[in-house]
Length: 129
Image 1 (cartoon, rainbow, N blue to C red):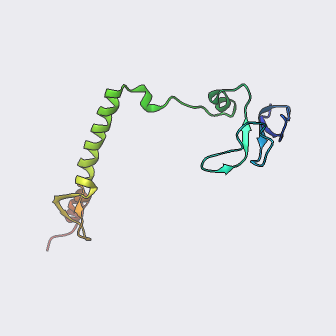
Image 2: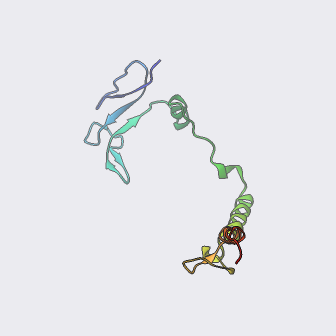
Image 3: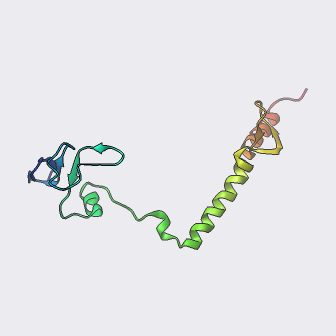
């Protein structure tokens, strides 16, 4: 069956296969329901009467997966953040500006480990004079 969202300003259009209806274009007909939302202001609004957001997403062929971070405890979230920051610093250097001990690139910026490895590879491929 084809799924549709009907436009029925001021009334529910109840079309065959309808899973929701557009009740306003932001210029009235909301009957007390919102006529828009921030930051858009007045705009089209739809209602999927009797459906949760998860049910509506499933009917539309999608799904609202559990939020990734909600699977972790607060302690695990903090640990993940700390480890992510440590890895970022190791890869990008303090403040993301490379490591002075790895030398500088052609623009004078400190190299990251990836930049330094590329420079080593480049030096190995150049014949010595």
